[in-house]
Image (cartoon, rainbow, N blue to C red; front, side, top):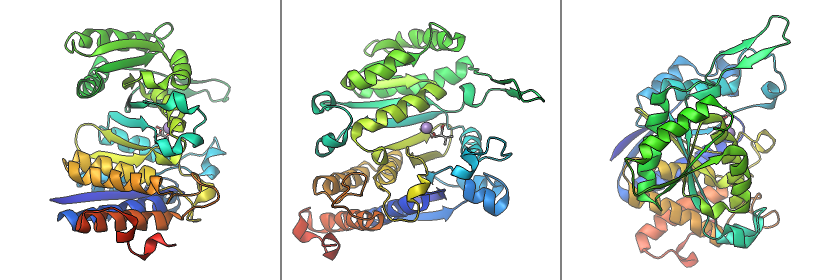
Length: 370
Ligand code: IPM
Ligand code: MN
């Protein structure tokens, strides 16, 4: 299979984690006989510094001509601490989502037994945690009208949703639920917000078309608590843009490291794959960032291409590094490996496993003895 992949490294640790995904994708391409080509584009703070724009036309064009986008991370403290900045790195990402019609952001949350001790939750609460968040990504308060009075004493952000925006992402979530444990939870604030009541009406109506899916409704404040007290109750979680942003960061810590979690943004045409962590500027260039969130996002990309065996080979490699403690500093502060080394180990595992069909240590080359 031939695939054109747009690569947007972005800011902070984006370039180094994305580089490990490319290593892994190259190993998959070699072993399974595919051709993946990569075209790099700028976005975010690096792009503002180089071009003045957070999303140059050229990057948008590269993305539109590709089969998928692999994206690193966005954001830089010099913009975070300057509320009057005219151009912000995040605008590039928001514009890209909008331009490409990436209306659904899919964030799987699961836990690894070998990492239970890193989770802020007790081990018994982590048993059976396996859910997936469908976050609406191109509507709501993120894209509503904004105002600021001239004297800068009054500001507004509008939260608006059209029925069609709710229907398309909800349908995707229901279809997904049908393939999983057949449970869907809509998270909203229907006791207060009109947009939430619209979401509820639409989801209630859609539930009739999916009688085998059981649907429940949860206010976002309660959901924030339930994710901590009983995360195993969730299967498919559906929610609007802003609530999805917040609860997915909350849910991400269950696994023990934010650095582990992947995401896919899908919609009308080309899809985008990115780790859910941010740009973590303090770690940039230090070879300490966890590449697994990016690598697992690349696995979601392979799934999206229909390359399921290849995606599973990547996930198996990831599990192998975790169970053998070939991990970065966020997971083991004492005995750890660098970002590059973890990427090499993953790529080696994929190559050797495929050749020898036995994934034991002995079959791996010298990179295991770092
Ligand atoms: C995310 C990020 C973005 C968002 C930021 C960088 C604009 O937090 O993908 O979750 O809020 O959507
Ligand atoms: Mn976020």
